[in-house]
Every structure is written in C-alpha cells, then in structure tokens.
Length: 261
Image (tube, rainbow, N blue to C red; front, side, top):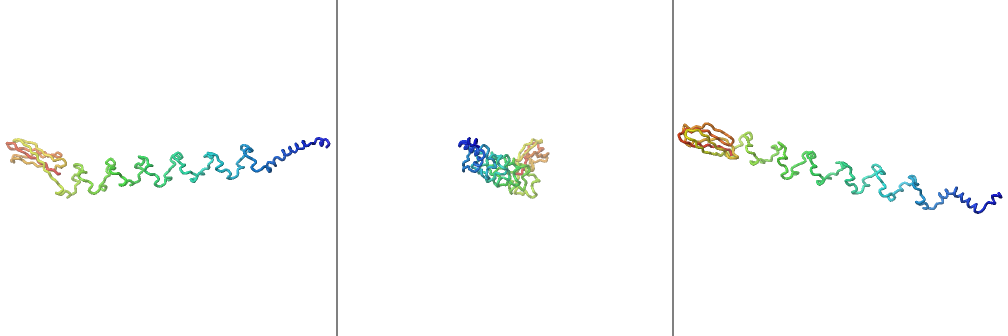
C-alpha cells in the first residue's frame, strides 16, 4: 500500500478516470447524453441508415431526386388514371395496336382521321351507302355490276327514246295492243330505176337512219301483161326488187321501202 500510495498523483488518477469513461461510459454518454440535433450528416457512415431505421411514410416526394423512381420501382398496376398528367401520353407512348375498338369513344373517329382508301367494300355495313351518301354523277357505267339494274330499280318513265339503242325493241318486247295508230309513223321511201326494153333489172330503195324496214312496194311506169316481178329481197334497211320489163321500150320501175319511224 505504501508503494501504491507513493505513486498516486493527481495526473495518474485523472488519466485512470479518463480511461474508465472511454471504455465503460462511452456508450452511456452516446445514448443518453447527446443533445437534440447533435448528430448530423457528417456523423453518419455510408449505408448506415437501413430500411428498418426509416419510419413509415418518412420518405416524401421532396426527398426523392429527379428521375429517382424508375420503372422497376413501380408495382404492376400502381399507375392509375388519376396519376397521369393530362397530355402526357402521346403517340410514342402507345404500343403498336394498343388502341382497340373498345378504347375508342363513340363518334371519336372523325373524317380527317380516316386515311384515304382506308374504307373498302368489306368495311361497309350492309345497306350503309344510301342515296344521300352518293355525290352527284358518282355512279357511272363502270360502277354498276352486270345485270344490277333491274326493272324495280328504274323510276317511272326513266327509259326515254334517247336511252334506247337502235333495234333494241324487238317484237317480243312489245305487248299485245300496245302499238296504236297514234304511236306508229310509217314513211314510204321511193326510188325510180329505168329498165331497158325487154330486159331484167334490179331496183332498190332504203329506209332512213332510225327507221325500220317493214315492207316493199313496186310500181311500173307503164303496165303491161308482159311485165313481172321476179324477186323481192330484204337486206337490212334496204329493199331490192328484181323485175322483168316485157315492153319493147324502156320502162320505169319505182321501188318503195315502207319504213316504220
């Protein structure tokens, strides 16, 4: 004891106390004796704040750096409609074929949005193109299918004389009793041909354009028992008569084409 007491000095005692506090009392000082707000960023080691040290809802929008939340940080289905800013979704944000019919509002596709030649026959509903949808003179001969214009499709009095082709009205197309005297115009076209004495000759006459040959007539200028008609020939709209003049002098034969105008 005398040896120890001789070595006790104030400096030795104070250094021993300092070691005691450094070893045994440092933890107690750190946990209970630190002042409020005394531990700042410089006192924190890197990666020392773990998930378990962060209070619920402690990390707010202002604590996030710009572009800090990436796609792999978002849960599936976490971005709802209310979280999307108006006008944020442009053409580049849409995947191919992403806009389906169910996603389109009624009347959403207007005329300027339809590409030219996009509406083909298969895209038209049955009976969707009515008279009001056709522009004036848009249906021409090339647009009509063969045999598509039937009798019920013709308006009353729609087929006029100008619409009928030449020779298009045959006997089978005329109803019994339909042709009255008032509807028929008969024209007689006469041509004179001189036939030599005691000779056989050919005389002719023809109907005008637009007329129909329906009969032939032949008249001698001088009648004799020796005169004769050998043949009457129809050829298109022309009438030919082969006749024999039995007189000793030339005789005139008048050939008449009876024409339906």
